[in-house]
Image (cartoon, rainbow, N blue to C red; front, side):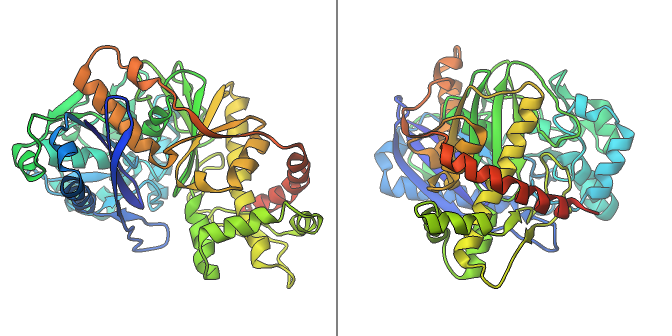
Length: 491
């Protein structure tokens, strides 16, 4: 038995899988985000640990025979979260999350100090990444930096609680911007530019290797009979890729979650400076990943649903129904355009302070129209990402759609049509990151060539293909979206 645990922004998912990678049990726990100011985003690391323990307590109570046979645990975690702990392994403050944009000035300063960072690290200096956050903390909360004994990423903190061992791995370490992708190691000059210290960085292991064993008190708590290996694990986007077997160059995964991420596996490090494309090491051996991010995906849909007093599934149905009739398609043609930048933009415009914009609203605009415009706006944003990657020679041969937003009836149709490629929707796609983490647990336990486990693709539950009629409609709508985007981007 193997466990995969995905520590996301809005919730934690834990699955138990057998040797055939079939899910036999699952548990979830919600997580809340604190936003002390506009553009700030935090969670306390102990909230992740409490959610983990609650989920495992549930699994132990409901499926004691399964948990008793547990052999290994793999972790997937939201990327870029800055966790600083003291000498007693206690968090010094809430973690600054991936969508925290407070360190704009520090990101600019880092870019001036290290002008070639985008050709060495995983992205241009960006406030969502680790180094600018460390610089912000040194400026505004210097005692936190002074008292810090180690920098970790979210899933690394949970692994520390499981094993008592400090460690990270390249897919997550790259997001600190203290890591040189060409050398696959933390770089002293990058660490110095951020005002941090090399001795405060964790040792690195590979994602698919053992990074400790489960502490005895936890084995007793959950009724586990034998030692349990804990794998290095991976950032959630890389774990999602592994969960659907996107472990070879040209294979990709599109995750629609709180944010949306288009990930394509590449044979080498292929940076795209100036476009906000993240290029971390993959969690599969010898590869990298090209990742473009839509900062607000299901979070934008949830915002609109809350604003309108309904739920996302209802809006999905209402928007999709517009495609059925001639009258509905006419409403689409006249609908507002939404640039869905509610939490800033990373790819391809690199502006964390940007906010959303809706244009061409009128007294005849309905809830249904707004729903269409929101789904469409997110899909157009994804299209900008794929166009950016293709312009730099990165193309996806096979693309699988995962995440909570993959339950939408409309988004897969819009995205497949805009990308011009078929999409495969695997079963258990809402658990893709947790399944990827479980696969890493299996590789850590069994050893040997990890690709035999990591590269297996699940059978598709559904395939979605481009639609000519929809393509023509979206071609007409694209100009309206681009006008809204231009207005949003204007100084």
